[in-house]
Amino acid sequence: MTGWNASEIPDQSGRTAVVTGANSGIGYVTARELARRGARVVLACRDATRGKAAEERVRAAAPGADVQFAPLDLADLSSVRAFAADLPGDRLDLLINNAGVMALPQRRTVDGFEMQFGTNHLGHFALTGLLLPRLREAGHGARVVTVSSGLHVLGTVDPRDLNMEHRYRRWIAYGRSKSANLLFTHELAQRLTAEGSRVVAVAAHPGYAATNLQTAGARMEGREAAARLAELANRLFAQSPEDGARPALYAATAQDVRQDDYFGPRFEYRSSGTPTRRTVRAPWTRNDRASAGLWAASERLTGVTYDWL
Image 1 (spheres, rainbow, N blue to C red):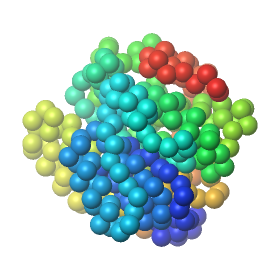
Image 2: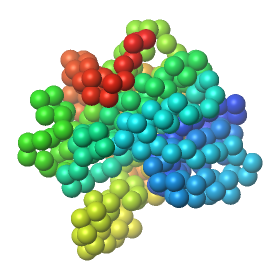
Image 3: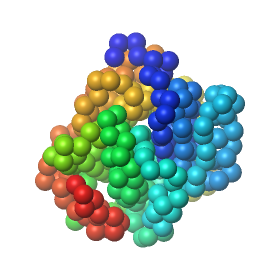
Image 4: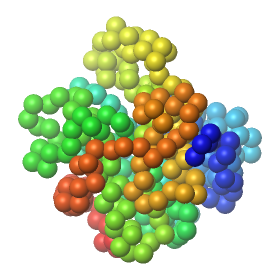
């Protein structure tokens, strides 16, 4: 992995990728770089105006790229089902579960779930389950890459209070949703291995990258001063979205990736031009009992079952 960067992505011609949250930040960079290497890329975004603008930006950056916007709101399971049903083609090579929300005031999804758990985990759990048959059709080289966060260490999933109905704390809710991403990856990897599938499930985290995640919660509450402070911190301390996208791109395309790997920047929160590496994760994110329990609860809550695994 030494010195690895996006220019080393293998040729992706003939492959199809779905990238959630691809209208900005590391999702946009991930989609752009895959398109530059020849992949057909679907930009799965909640906001149509921003999604279509991102499509045009990718086309400008990668002339001749096969790229299209498709509407997807992970906070609405009916939107997730519609996206999966409308996605053209029979096979899918890469699913990049990138979209997310961070440290929001207490909110609910359309289906009544705590917003961070519902968007960051349940929406992606349902999407992956609905698209997994296509990934299996692609066979060797097909991957599910789920973007977690180093802040998953803030808390593990509480099976007794998945929606944090008791004493909501925004950062703990965020940490739990990111732990859920890793537990999901762990359980999916085990099930794929047991099945003998050639689909690989891995996770990545970007470190501290300058995106709109840091300002969304403050702006939602009208705390403009806090949002400006977050923007200043981004300029002073955060790495670029290009560096932040490296771990997910590596997880999606590198040759030495294994089931349940977790990639991040060398110095945990910043890449600063350094290579991506396998990184540490909280021990609870490899707990078989916890991952199986979250899986069962996620199937019940979303109504999406992985009967074939």
